Length: 559
Image (cartoon, rainbow, N blue to C red; front, top):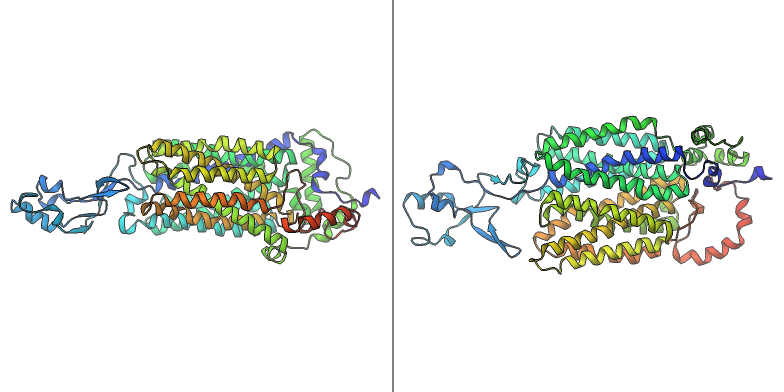
């Protein structure tokens, strides 16, 4: 009768152990594959930053020094008086006054001189940047909306990439989808170096988004499926997010020495070369191969893993019942429609998607805001990356020892409270505001790590990548909105912080509706998913009396 028993994947592969050379190879290879994502994920912060600027006054206008000094009027922004960035005195009138010897504020009041827009272009400060896409294509004043639009279009690409890559990964395999998205990302960034216009740059940025975040998600799912339960928790925090944080911290260091935007994109594109040798180190997911009925390929990978770990594999890795069941299920194909058909899975997907929207909106808005903070933008960006290191370490400890509800709720609540407090700080205490914003970033980053782990634990193998793709696709609503959230600060300084803080605290409550996955086995089929909270009590009672019945079900088994 033992040959009729159908085990879950973790039980089948338990002979490999928790950690060994095989697990370490997978851990390091996937971590390295994610490292460029952190490195290139935020380059728009420097490539698209807007330096101080004002209207250009042509030298050939013959304006005296006295009148030239007042041609750019003063304006008050957030309580600070500074020279206008988008207007100047009417140059024809100013030239007439200057040539006729009219004395400023004696013969004519300068406040009565009409203003005009920057008809001759702008002059930009080169104190920080030699050039950005803003200075090259004059994305200021009436065209200032194009800069947040550029970032939003990039995240539209991420949305499309998440949708396509999820379907591609579940249908054709994790490994082919992973490397296809890596290639797309690298080629798009390389082409950006030669962009002749803002439109071409933005289109290529769209493609870079489609490839970049998709390989991040596929790599996360691949590691989650291959590694053992103990290694999985470490991978979710240190392997995925810590690798991204290292790349994140390296980005401002490189940008500090390369102040011209086209030159800065060269190391961004070159880091894609690191993907090439990884093809021979990253295998296909055996768990996915089992769901496709490809038993021989899955067994071959597991036997190589056992040999690499210096462990003797069982003579028969799979029982006959498991083989028959996998072959019977291999023709079953799951799509996004299966998520919509199943009420429980749809409810869980909806809540997860809302959490992803809330977290990504705050996370990317805080990243994009680093160049607007008081102080050096390179140091602020580096500090923003540094806060991610303790956040991921704390997330690792929480995931290892605490319920998922505590992990998610506490991190979101901390981030939300800190962000809300930023707008209460007086303008003459900018350092306090920076510290509070970094603490808010700490909480949101921790929540980002946790929501990835929770989502991967909730969804079954047969549709995990598609479901994760749906969550990531929904999250792009947050990332698409994030640049415009920061843009609202031009009209009311506190509004971005109020919106982010309230949403984060709302997410801290919302996550309590999800099923608890701490210490639970990863589900393989849709029927093994845990029920949403309203149905949990009823299903738990049924589960207590239904174990014997579940063992006889072969069409929706643990494989």
